Structure formats: C-alpha cells, structure tokens
Length: 555
Image 1 (cartoon, rainbow, N blue to C red):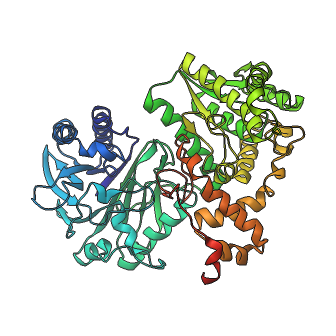
Image 2: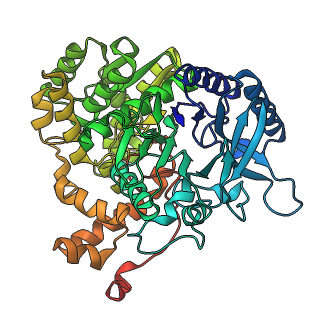
Image 3: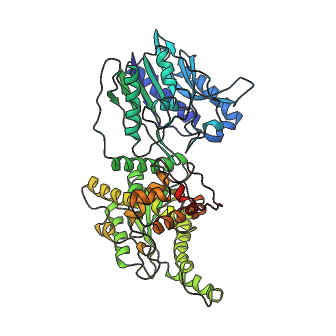
C-alpha cells in the first residue's frame, strides 16, 4: 500500500478553505500513486474549534462539507480525515471526534476517538462523547489500526501513571491491526519531537506493527502545531519524516524507507515555531496591514522585531522608538541600528512632553508623596498609548515584547508595555531570549541584532541608572526557579532542595508569580512553546489566599 501523509495548515472555522486544501492535496496524492491519503484530526474544522461546536448551523455545514469533499476528491483513492460527527443517541455529549474514511463519495468507515484529553490546553470532554470501543478498519483487504491523537498516548511505558483505563493501541493490536494510523492535532512544545519519537517507537516495538502518524501544522492563536508527520517501521525505526512548521505531503510505500533529516537544535525549532505563530496569526485573522513593534534598544524588543521580520518581511514591520529623559543614547542608537540592519521603517517619538504633561496634571493629587512606581508606569503607559494610537490609525498589529520571566513576576505594566494583540515572547524565558538573539545572528551570518543590545545589562530605563537586578535576582537564577515552579510544578521546599537557593528568595519569587495572575489575565494571547504556558492551559485563581510556607514542610 502507498500512503500519503497530508500535513496541512487549516484555519479554524474556514470550512470552504480547509475543504479546498483537502481536495487539492488528495489529488496530488493520487497523482503520486497513493492508495490512501491521511489528513489530521478535525481537519475539516481546524483545531481547536472550541465553541463553534455548539453552533448547530456550523455542525450542519460541516456534515455537508464532508459529503462535498467525498464527491470532489478522486474516486479511486481512500481519504481518511478528521471531523466532528453528531451523536445520534439520546444520552451523552452531542458530538464525537471522528476519523472518516471516504472512498467513491461514500463513508466507508467511521472511527470515534476514545481518549478525550481534558487538561492543560485541551478541553475535549466539554464537547465530545468518548467512544466505548475501538475496532480495526478493514479496507481493501487490510486491517488498519486507525485511532485519533490522544488514543496513542496511554501506551507510554515510562509514564509514572496513566490518565485512562483503556489503551486503544493494545486493543487494535489484539484485533490484528497490520498498520497503526494516527491522525492528530498535537500542539508543539520544546522537546515534543523527542517525546513523540519515543512513544511511537515503543508502540511499534511492543507490537511489531508499523506506525503512520499525521499531525496538523501551523498556528491557531496560542497553539503552535509542528506537523512532524512520520512513519516508523515495525521495529520502531523512523523511516520517513515530513517537514516541521511547513505544509507537506509525504508519500510512503510499504516496504520502503524515505529520507530522514538530521534533527535540528531545539533553539532552531523554537525560533521556527515563533515565526510560524506570528505569520499565521497575522494572515489567518486577515485584520491587519502591518505589524508594529516598540523598540527600546533592549533584547526582548529586538528579538520580537527579528522574528516579525522573518515571519512577515521587513516591508510589513514598523518600528517605533520612544525615548524618555532616562533613555540612554545607546538604547536609541541600538534601535536605529536594528532597523537599518533589517531595512524597516523606524519612527522616533519622544515621550518627554506627554510624561511631563501627565506629571503636571497629577501634581496636586500626588503632593506630599515620593516618586515611585506610579511615576515610572506613566512612562510605560505613555508608550502604550502611542503604540495603540498608531495601531488604531493604520490598522497595525501591535506585538508585545515581554518575556515569560517578566510576565511571571509581574515585571510589566498593565496598559503600557503589555498593550498589544499578540504576545510573541510570553512563553520564552529571558535566557532563552538571549539564545534566540544569538541564533538569529548566527543564521544570518552577520550582526542583525546589535552586539551591544545582547551584552548590555537589562533595564526598563524608567528611573536613573535602573537595572532589572535592582528588583529581580539575576535572570539565570530567576529562570531556574520559575521553570521548576511553573513548568515542573515544584513548590517551595522542593525548589530549595534542588537549587540550594535561599528560602526567602524562592518564597518571594513564588509569591510574585501568584500575585500577578490578574495582570496575565489581561495580557494578549501568547505563543505557547513550553509544556506549561500562561493562558488557556494554566488556570490559577486570581483571588486566593494560599499560605505555602505554613505547609512547606509537608511536601
């Protein structure tokens, strides 16, 4: 059998556009001699369709589109695709997450998803009923072990515990499956390639069955899908691999091996993920003329700008430098150098007149108080006001530049530097931002991001001689603590035991993370590149009173 792995990039809700891609890709697969072409999970609607699935008219349109696809694709090739199907029973959720096998315009088989993830960014129990059983699909004399995304993840041998009682992989193997076929919409996080590779390899080796895996590619708001569609032989060897973060049609014939490229460094993959996230957010919304970045001369805005240019081109990125009375000449010079290196338009708008006006307006009310954070934030909010004015006037997408380290501890200003439509670096720790900057320059073979930007001490420049380390521990220390707390879900005593850091320091950082949830709830959506990002996958109460120090010794 010759199988096409159709790794395509859908837009959520774009039934017409998605079906057009499916039809075109199926025709190409047929031309390449494929007997079967496999598409990702919920490809008809795009993933995740969220509450579109509660719209009866939308669901009727989906059902109509499936039939139209069946009529339009080549009639002598099998088409396996993912879509929601209505549950005809009188009990249970109204939908199933399904894989549908079409041939000759007829629905030859339907496979229903059994394991429904409801954790982190997933909320499938909200919409779907779980299948009570799984069965192999018999087609053209073959037994196909078709299953959907999460259905393969309960087979991991090294798992410390299992989320589900059922294991569809074992059941399909016991029914005589000759080949596993998984259709997925599995979001990327750093290290996902290695996890996926190990999991599929284990399944193949356990059952001596080859494995075809087809994953969605592209970005839908926060979620980034890497593709990484692949084929493993019965002994677990990776024998064919699609591109990452690009649409691809991979044709594999049983008994043959394709070309498998050398894995990229993780920072390269993170870079590609963020570029994809910006590009797809911009193009799939279709709402903006250009992207806008406030350039401070610092590392975060420089990297955000660099990623935006790679995603959209220099002609669609506008930079703005907004010096205050505390801005160093080097910060302005670095912003100019960055803009010149990329050939993008740069506006210089000093904020001194506006800040002075605000201070004058507040003189009477602030009388008798000492200057502090309120005055510093007037500067940040003035910049935010100017950027939003440009965004409104010219229909620009404002990209916020704050990183995960800052967002974690609240080192950001609401209605100031947090203004924007997309938070590019909100899931990237500060030290990773430096890695990205080095990667950008190395890949270009020249200094696009100024060396002075990379080497200068981080500063918000909101008061004389201000440095980030006046308020925060050094970023390597901060990032270590934050990574253990947010991503590894360790708490006070565990973090102290692992790191050896001072208990007061660790407790202060954790307290800052907890207390600044209200800020993060008001931030724009951020691109997810880690196992645990702020946003839809992390649900922490804003109003709470959790005294960890009282119970730390119990952990």
